[in-house]
Amino acid sequence: MLLPDFFEFHLPTRIVFQNGAITLLADEITRLGRKRPYLITDRPLRESGALAKVEAALRGAGMAPAGVYDDIPRDSDVRAVERGAELARASGADCLVALGGGSVMDTAKGMNILLGAGGALLDHQGINVIAGPLWPLLSIPTTAGTGSEVSRFAVIKDTESHSKVTFVSPHLASTVAVLDPELTLSMPPKLTAATGMDALTHAVEGCFSKGATPMTDAIGFLAMRMLSENIVKAVHDGADLAVRGRMVVAATMAGVAFSNAGVCCVHALAHTLGGLYGVPHGIANAILLPLGARFNLPTCRTKLDQFAEALGVSASGDAESKIDRITARLRQLVQDCGIPPKLRDWMVPEDGLAQVASGAMCDGAMFYNPQDAAEEDLLAMVREAW
Image (cartoon, rainbow, N blue to C red; front, side, top):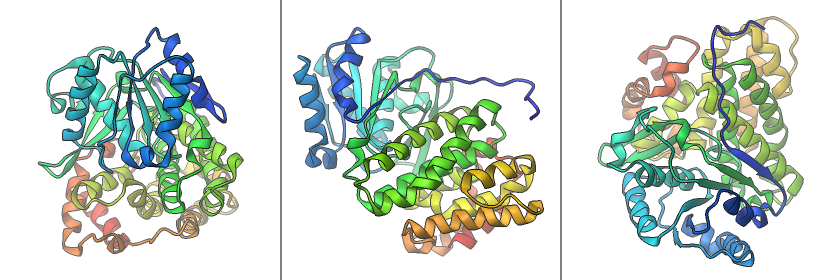
């Protein structure tokens, strides 16, 4: 493998994995010198009892939460972030604990920007705009998908512009990620499928990104193999704790890989579809992943054997046959997970596809796409996906 002339790799997050790991949360907060955590979650997790388990674990260790914020929409938005930051500031908290999926963790990151850096949230959008450290943030993922517990990204919807705004900074990464597979046991099959395909997309795009390095490849390809081997099992037998554990760890590994390497055109399109039409992020990624892979893999010929091995298909034959098998395997995974494979199934209008392609061209993920892509290329993808 040829080494890049220059690369950086960041992993500022301490990762703790264990069945029942929430019992370690208070110790982790104490280790950081804090004692008044503010909990961020959503109403379904309150109703499911997951929040109560975290509160009980804290109180059992003699630590009382400063407050709870659970008014978080499916897609984190600017208003939810601003309201949460106001409540956290007024509570006298000294750290944040995010319990949930990507929307909850992105909301917590957005709140942390306002608490630690001040100003208006949209003042901090873009890459490395945040100048200094923020509050300690401990993240507890309840899905195996977004990787937000270790990423330096936050994607937050601006309802006024109908767009998703990206924030990128090493300071956004969680201080601690607490991985407890038991908290994912209650995920229904559809959510398991969507979040699992999100994680798989992170691994795949991270490995063919222009920002990929030997370190991100080492983590990303192993994550890809673990996800491809376990996602269908997790969808169809959600009570298998060993499978859930592998999914949680693999999703976090994929988060480490893409946070350092970047993601590509599939994510650019998924961000735009979410902003314009509310297509769930993992679903958009699942539908578009085989198409994005087919478009980009010809530029990654030296890695085709690694992609094939990680996805469990034959690496024999020429490059074209390998690409065909890899993309067919990705389509099969989408089908086996029970995800409707067309954008029309998710209420995307045909006359809106041009706007999707145009919007995606402006997304920062396109910077990492290994194959030069014009707006016409992206339009062809979404038309085929429609």
